[in-house]
Image (cartoon, rainbow, N blue to C red):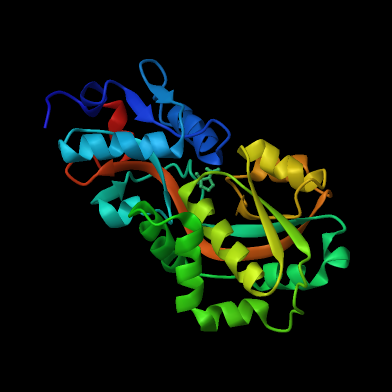
Amino acid sequence: NGSGNVGDQVNYKITGIDPGAGLMKATKKAMKEYGLTDKWTLNEGSSAAMTAELKKAYEKKEPIIVTGWTPHWMFKKYKLKYLEDPKGSYGKGESIHTLTRKGFSSENPGATKVLDQFNWKPSNMEEVMVDIHDGTKPADAAEKWVKAHKKEVAQWTKGAPRGGGKQVKLAYVAWESEIASTNVIAKALEQQGYDVKLTQLEAGPMFASIADGSSDAMVAAWLPTTHKDYYDKFKGKFDDLGPNMKGTKLGLTVPKYMKVNSINDLKK
Ligand code: PBE
């Protein structure tokens, strides 16, 4: 497919996502560290626009480089690979943490308990993501998952009192992974009798809304690297309930039909 080096093939373009994503920051860092500076550009957009471009290229077997992460449905639907990152620009494997606003744990100990016990695997999240990608509404996909995984959900709600209609305001970003996780924990809380409200925000405002108390909780803090800036900026203004998932990954992603294997090779 195509001639010349990889840069020429993709017009020196990397298809990114929303500018607030930690993945965009990591990609800018990677581009510096691997010397992809002069001709290369990182396009900003959204994760939905990124996957639309990927689909278009993939169907025509055209070369494309996107910013990718795991868990994501795209690794289930397409044959993709991460470019090797020998310099470690994208950091190591991470965890996704649950954060709550200050004061929430004493005002709503029941919901806090559920949020604290919320914990699942990348493969679980991928199931929900694939279902949503296949056309199921996020709330319906979440309900389906919760119904089919009573054992897991029982562990999250174990020992937590009924909600009695108490409100829980969850903030999230429209990343496919976070659409899935936020809808699933929302269903688990609703099942427990809480009145859950979802607010979609950009990444910075999501962290800010926990810090200023306008949201109660989020299940979308990728740590220690991806959201380090946001985490450090608001440190002391939220409670960190710890990981709800381990084993995530970020990096430059290409279809397997491309010959390139390492970010190092993009310079050639
Ligand atoms: N993501 C998905 C986010 C965190 C969750 C990898 C796109 C980010 O880069 O900030």
